[in-house]
Image (cartoon, rainbow, N blue to C red):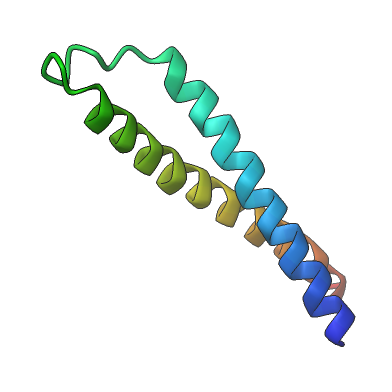
Length: 77
């Protein structure tokens, strides 16, 4: 029981980190310089980090929910 919880926690942590990194890479390809004022690069990077964390966590939660639902399909049949 406890090993299962530990394994789920580890999978969740890795999933969140991986999807946040993927989102960060994708956001680097989007030109957002016209949205921010000149000489506000620090604020722009902080906003991009927050957006990457929010989007990456949301996608990771969907992925983890989907994984859990697929494991529960055993009880359907």
